[in-house]
Amino acid sequence: MTSLIVLLCIILIAIVMVQIGKVYELTTQIKGEEATMRDNSKWNGWLSLIFLVVFLIGVVWSAYSYKNVMLGFGPHESASEHGKTLDSIFNVTLFFTGIVFVLTHLALFYFAYQYRWQKGRKVKFIPHDNRLEVWWTAIPAVVMTFLVVRGLNAWNTVMADVTPDEDYIEIEATGQQFNWILRYPGPDGKIGTRNYKLTSPTNQLGIDFTDPKSWDDVVLPGGEFYLPEGKKVRVRIVAKDVLHNFDLPHFRVKMDAVPGMPTYFIFRPTTSTAEYRAQLRHYPEYNEPFDAAEPNGPKRWEKFDYELACAELCGKGHYSMRRVLKVVSQEEFDAWYKTQKSFYLTEIRGKEGDPNLQKTLDAEVRQRAAEFSENMKKAVEATDATAKTLPLNHINFETGSATLTADSKYELDNLVTALNTYPAINVEVAGHTDNVGDPAVNLQLSAARASSVVKYLVDRGISAGRLTAKGYGETKPLVPNDSPENQAKNRRTAFTILN
Image 1 (cartoon, rainbow, N blue to C red):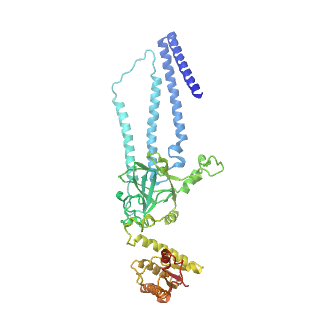
Image 2 (image 1 turned 60 degrees about the vertical axis):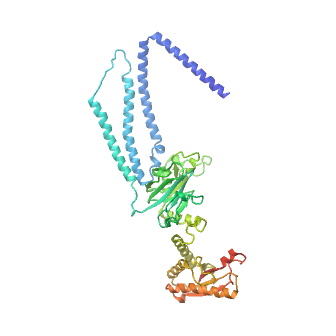
Image 3 (image 1 turned 120 degrees about the horizontal axis):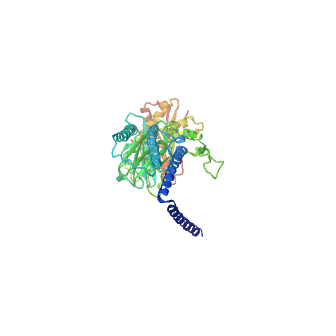
C-alpha cells in the first residue's frame, strides 16, 4: 500500500511539473520573449546572490559546528609530538585554500548577477591581459612554494628515522585479515629477524628462532597494548596478505602496511589516556552517557580509549582490526611489560620445531635469574618456615652420580649472587631422590649431591660456615612415587634459609 501511495505521489508531481511548464509557455507568449528573458535574467541574478549568502553562511556554520569532530580542533588535538606540526600544515593550507574558496565563489555568483542579460548590453571581448596573467600566475606560485617548502620541512622532520644512540622503543605491527599482531622486544631491546619461509600454525610471524634477539620477544596476538608517555616509538609495519593501513588517528600516525615491503613510522606520545580523558570531560558532548540505555552509567569521556585501526577496506571483517591502545606513564608501562612473557620461551621452547633443544639460552638465564632473585627476596622476608625452602629447579646431575652438569652453573650462580646479597643468612642444601633402588644407596647419593652443590658455592667464595649439606634420600617425597612424572618431581635439590 505504501509503495502504491509513493508511486501516485511521483505521478502527481510529474503532472504538476508538466502543467507548470505549460503555464510558463503561455506566460511567455502573453508577455513576449524579450520581457520574459529580462525577468528571468533578473530573478536568476538575484537568486544567485541569495544562494551565495546562504551557501557561505552554511559553509562557515558547518565548519565551526563540526570542527571538533572533523578538523582536529577542540578535544581531538594531536596527542603526539609530530602531530602538532602536521595539524599546523593543514591549518595553514586551509587558510589559503579558504581564501581562494571564498573569493572564487564571490566572483562566480557576483558575475552571474552583474552580467545577467540586459537589453542593449554588448559583450566585451578581452583576448589577453598581461597584468591579469601575472597576478593569477605569480600569486598561486608564491603561495604554493610556501606550502610545498613548509610541507617538505615537516615531512623531513616527521619521517626522520631514529639514530642508534636515541632512547626509543621499537615494536612491530603485522596486519592480517583481520587482526594486528604486535611484537615487542624483550629485555635486550631488539626485535628478532623474520623469514616468511618459517611461517607455520605455531609461528604465524615466521620468526627465526635461531636468532638470539628473537628469544625474548613478546607477541601480542590480540587485546590491549601499551606504550609509555613521552618516549619515542618506532613502529615496523608489515602485512601478511593484503594491503592494510596502520592508523592511530589521535596521534596523526597513518602508514600503509604492504605485503613484501616493510614500512615504518616514528612518533612520540605526549598525552596519556588518563590525561586525554580529563581533557574530554570539559566538552558537553563527552559528558553524555556512553550507553544511551544507561543514562546514569559512565560518561563518554570515562570510556574513551585511543584506538589502532586499519584505514584500508581489507575485507568484510575490516571492522575487527580495531585494537585499544593505552598510553601510560613509564612506571605503569614497565609494570605491564614485566607481566608479558616471551613467545618463544612459552610457546616454542622444548617443543617440536624448536631449533635450540640442546641449548640453554641467554634469555632463559636472564629470566631464571630474575625469578630466582624475586623468590629469594620473598623467602628472606617470609615468617612462615615452609616458605623459606626453595627448590633449585635448574640443576642436574649425571645419571646415578653426584657430578653436576655444565648447565647447572647458571642456577648455582644465581644462588651465589643471592648469598652475597644477603651475607647474614645461612642455608641448608638438601638432596632428595625417588624410591627407585636401594634406600641406603639413595640416601648416600642425595648426600653426595648436596655436598657437590656446597662445594660449588665454596669454590665461588661463599664461606663454608654458612653452608650445610644434608641428604634425605627418599624420606621426604613431595608427591607419591606412583608414576614416572611424580618420581621426577621427587628427584630434586633444594635449600632452606636457616636464619
